[in-house]
Structure formats: C-alpha cells, structure tokens
Length: 405
Image (cartoon, rainbow, N blue to C red; front, side):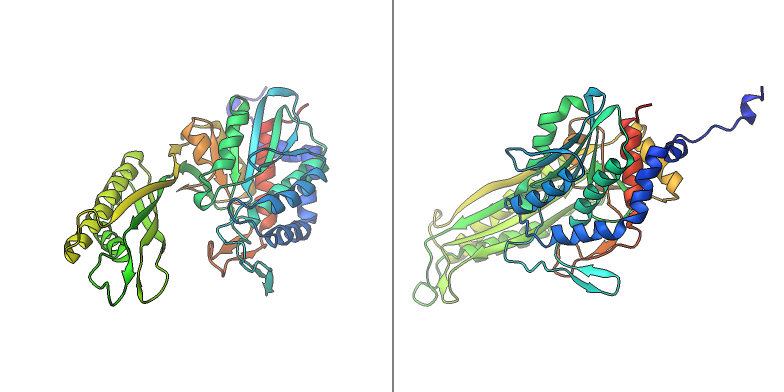
C-alpha cells in the first residue's frame, strides 16, 4: 500500500458533483437558466410591499408545488415547501424574502436593456426568489433523496418595518430541527455573510398646537423641533470600529405651506456591529431629539409643555456571528473552491440575523448573476453567471443535507 503522503484524497464536493444524481441537477441548471430568469421576471412584476406579500407568495407557492414539494402558507404569510429527509429530527432551511421596500403603487414592469433587466426589486429580492425556484427544480430533477429534510421558504417581513417577522416565525417553528439556515438575498456569488449587524429602528414624533403661519407666527413648530434634533444627533461621533451607521429615512408632517403643523415625525435606522454601540446610539438619539424640542420651545418662549415628544420602536434586529470553525462555513468554502469562486466574508443585516443570534449556524448568500441600484427605482439585474450561483446553492444544500446512499 502506498504511504499516506502519496495517496490522493478525493475532495468530497468533487465526489458529490460526480454522483449521477447530483450531475442531473447540475445539468438541469446549465440548461435552464433562461427559464429561471423568466420566473424571476414573473415574480418581480407582482408588487410585494412590506405587509402585502400575499399575491407574490401565491405565485411562489405554485412554482414550488410544481417541483413536487409539499407546500403550505403559515399564519405569518411565509410560503413553505418541504422535501422530506430520512432523519425527521434534522433540517436545512433555505429562505428568500418575498417583500420589497417599494410602496404598492410603484411601477414594477421589467424592462430590458442589452443584457440587463431593470425594475424595482429585480435584484432584491427577485434574484433570491428565482434562485429558490431554481433550487427546487434542480433538486426535483436530480431525484436525490437526503438524510436531512430540506425546507424552502419564501418569507415575509425582511425589509423596512417588517422586523424580520417571517424568519422569526420560521425559526420558532423549526428551531430544534435546524442544523443550518441559508438566506438567499440578492444576486452575486462572491460573498458569504457570516455576521449579522444589530439595528434599532425608531419613529420620533413631536406634536403641538399648530396654527396659522402669519397670525400664529412665533408658536413652536414640530418640524423645526425635529430638525433641531436631527442636526444635534448628526454632530455626534460615529465609531469606525465597531463599524456603525445611522440614517434619517422618512420625515413627514404638516398640511400646507401656510400652516404651522401640529405634528411632525421622523423614522431613523441605527446600526452597529456591536449591540452595546447601537444601544448607545439610540440613547444619544433620544437625548438629541428631546434637546431639539426643548430648544424650539425656548426659542419661541412658549410654555414648557407646548410640544410633546414620543418614541416608537419600529423594529430591533439582533446581532450574531457564525464561528470561524463552523462546519457550515467549511462546506460553502469547499463548494467555492470546487467552482473556482473567490468569495469574501461580509457583515450585513439579513434574515440570517435571527438564527445567528440564537446560535443556529446561518449565512446569507446571493443567488447568482449581478445586480445594482438596490432599493432605488433604477435597480437592475444581469443574469450572466446565474448558473454559477445556482450550482453553488445546490451543492451547498445537498452537502449539508447529506445524500442518501
């Protein structure tokens, strides 16, 4: 027998890809990229603003059922398809969020220009949903049976004020069975999100008596008070380590140009790699907005209670991090080597935050292709390279689920 140093140890991913069953799934991906793109367009053109994902969910349910999955919609609105494994106590969850950041009246007709597709939500998360559909079909075509159950879910409430309610419900339902969670979010195959960024989202509201812009000039103005608070908060120091950020995303108030408003509100997003830092930012925000209101009252010489302030939480996303020695990370790294993908580790706020915060191994990856302009009306997607992303997802899921012999 040859010495150990002379033996060639076959890479497990290479061995898996050479399995005739996996080969059938990979061949289906090579031959059906255009079909997957067609499904992406179909799903993207169904509006799915936060809290109104049902129509898009129904279309996804139909596509998953056509791949032979047992599909249902839970009480939260998640569309869930299961591919049963021989071990009923262990499962892999693959989730792609259904919702977008755009309001219901947004034009979402997909337009083509050269190789690119343009539409709000075409990448985030049309690309993720298309990858979920492609994975379901590739698994079906492979006729592969696995040890662990594979759960494919289109989940609600990932964006905006949804507060990750869809993935929270999924983890609550399957938690003890989950050995890994993969969130498929957007395109691109060059990253692996292994750390969830903590975030606090708040609405700050200031109210007052209002009045006429001429006859009541000098009365305290809630919009001015909000503005003073924004300026105060914007002057505080934001650390680079841990990386942190803030954003004043929506400001509203008033009824006409010649009326002193009786109400003004601002919605704020605070983020940090560190839970303690995002808590510090929230405390600083509350102090700054209170001071801004007080400054407005003092400047107008109004009664101390002329303005009132309130704070409402719009959502809290917990932080979490996948250990560097996690088998999940080792698996996708092996798949990336096999596919010659040079991937980098990233930190972000995704559906993976919830399982990571609970100690469940989780990552977020793209579904393949390229995209840009996320969360803008000029969002675009290019399907070139989609096959690589789908193969990456397919091989990772099958590796984790364990093909039956």
